[in-house]
Length: 215
Image (cartoon, rainbow, N blue to C red; front, side, top):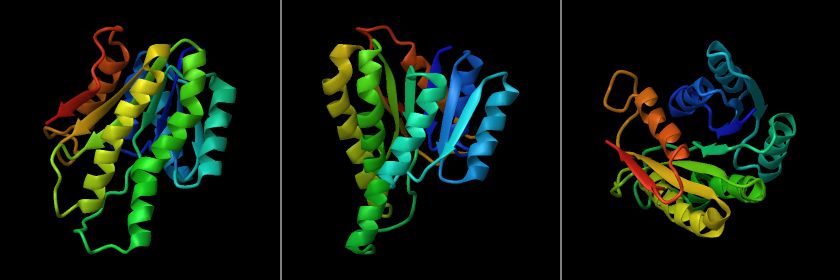
């Protein structure tokens, strides 16, 4: 059975993407920091008839994240889709955070994605291809959310780097840039946003998009 892994499977975009992919018959591995979040995402997948395998890991803990990915791959096989949806969303301007706080934000917003892609991307390439999707945002930098603006700019750069590294091996890498606050029933409904993930995964070679902006 084809599989996907969703990192950052919280009740917004993460759960919606897991649900959308499960509807298409993919088994879903879900990773989140808390057991309660993992269990909730597993229930979402099960409600749509999908198989779910959960693991807890803090994305800033490299060893834990790699171990969680390995545990899911051992159960489900190398995924066709890898989704990185973790983010540290907070209000801060330049000068508000200490250097350590900026490093913490970057660890969640960018470095965790690097760890996941570096750990799973080569296996996807060896398996013949797949899709790596990064949840982006901040199409324009916003001074009041400086650390998140910097992080999403980093994800955009990472998308390009990964596409250059893995694209020739059949791995499509793209970012879904969400330009507003996610909430059900709004223009940023997570179920609407999740449609982009499935569409990007099913794009044929030669028609790959690197970035989709929602909003």
